[in-house]
Amino acid sequence: MGISTESQFHVLAVDDSLIDRKLIERLLKTSSYQVTTVDSGTKALEFLGVHEDDQSNPDIPSVSPNTHQEVEVNLIITDYCMPGMTGYDLLRKIKESSSLRNIPVVIMSSENVPSRISRCLEEGAEEFFLKPVRLSDVNRLRPHIMKTKPKDQQEDKQENKEEELGKPEFQSREEKEEQQQQQQHHHLQHQHSNSNKRKALEEGLSPDRTRPRYNNGLTTVV
Image 1 (cartoon, rainbow, N blue to C red):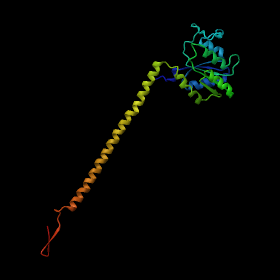
Image 2: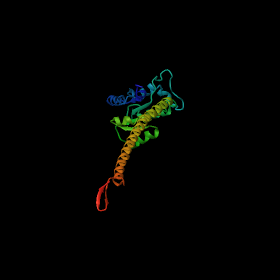
Image 3: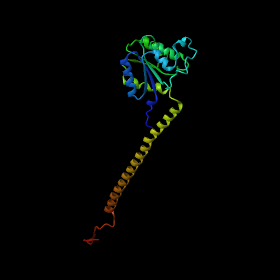
Image 4: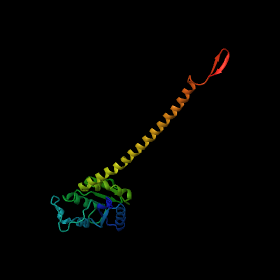
């Protein structure tokens, strides 16, 4: 298969800063993710097909079938400090929506405020990244994205993984067979060497070996 696994995943990035949006977009694309960027929480909800005005009652799904995005979103990464709707507000609205609450949400912030981090994690955020976001941070997204992967694709991945694991195992058996053959060859050589030594020793001690005999004071060679 020519398409990488990550390229099948779609990430929605939300940040009011153009520079930060470009940075996170570049990092995500470097990791082969499909990326959509918006500059506010309101636009993020619009992209997700959620009408912000309808969120007064969180028990009522507020997804419009006419405006709901055609591309599935596998993860949302949003800045915390934004004018109007903050990243925390966006997180709450997503988790309050019955149709969106299973989408993993990651929060970004340039400020390391423990209480803010705890509040976001308690509300359901998967991670809290400190800016500037690095590629090592983006690599941490994959386990959360895999939760949204369809079951059939997970099974395909498992099969591929088993095949990949099988290849080294097959090669290992060949190497073991070759090693056993080398050991057997070495053993045969060792046996042959011992046989030659034993033969030489037996010849040296053989009673039939030509040796001098003494008879009536005369030495004769038999």
